[in-house]
Length: 301
Image 1: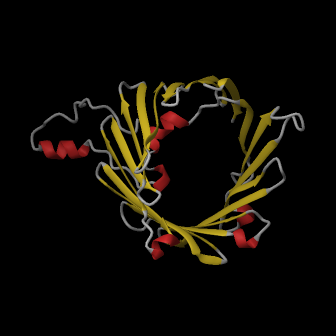
Image 2 (image 1 turned 180 degrees about the vertical axis):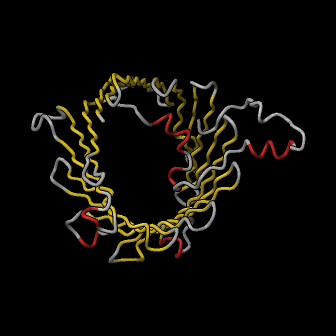
Image 3 (image 1 turned 90 degrees about the horizontal axis):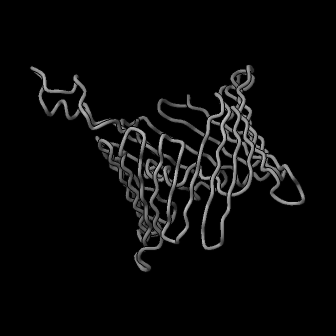
């Protein structure tokens, strides 16, 4: 587990020559810096991930013997009467044809549109450069520079290749049990306020607070590892003008069974079953004022 247990093992108990403060610090897990959007993920993943409550999806992922290339596909079954099996195809090609870069994603969706993402992490120590394009409009080419050369910190600068001032920048820093971060775009040069966030993880407890949209919207998320198999989580969003706008609570057991209830009166359940190694089923159901919806996803890897 990411947080571990609050109980002390025999190696953690007081022993001659080992101070209590050193033992406490040894039990604090030093987290790595994360992307700004992932600051609350430890809790929000419990509430938002793996809820397939509408439609039918078939996913496959296959690693090939050709230079470690990975092929993935996703088929949405019976979404409408026009096409019964629209698919999305994705390739990942590490060092294609010996090239000094990696194609992280080459994707074609059901409409025949493409996405290409390539990266190079040997430009400078600690610097990773990514390029993203739709292979159609050069003005939409995006460059992403990620720098991790400063201990316990991560800085990301994303901008359009043809318009560098159209950018988004972020930085996160981790110290002990805390991670803090900020994110901003060109509006900050005209007096705009950045987004800020912080997270704290200690033992089975986790909490995160995000302030966005000019420090006018606040998101709070928290989770608690009740037992080795059960985690509970809650989140809410409030605005400076409108007050509390949404809230939800949920739980996950063994990473397979999930349930959540939201402030709007909706409720969701999710069940994952590993039929065999690399063969899993994920099903979900949602009840709301609009009625009941359900969905299913079959994954083969």
